[in-house]
Image (cartoon, rainbow, N blue to C red; front, side, top):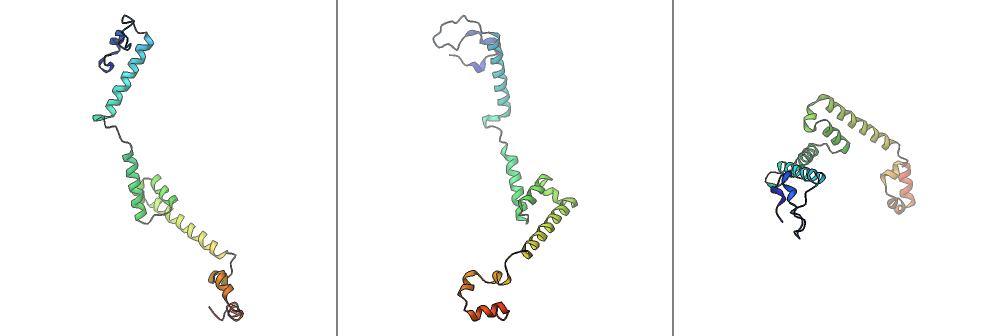
Length: 153
């Protein structure tokens, strides 16, 4: 069997694909020639994309984005939504834009306000916030009365 790589589409009429040697005079059909030409073209294109046979690694862009994201985390941007917002708007370079900085500051203010509202609307009493259920159950009646009257903390 000869190597197909070194042949052009016109040369494939030699029928070298039959290991028994039968039918050496067979001519390939137009469809077979077209398929061979397409395969050869795809192979050539692949060789262009893969210099030295090592392949083209698209992960380098992902690695850079990941490194940039880690750098932003080191700068104090820990919230995923905040990091996504920064990365969608250009990464570290977006932090030079006053609009992006303002949007991040606004989101942080809103988050802090929601957190404060959640703290004030808690259904627990001041005593429940101060003492654990185990501590309350371990108190004597006198200690519990003092806590309830605000005489002891």
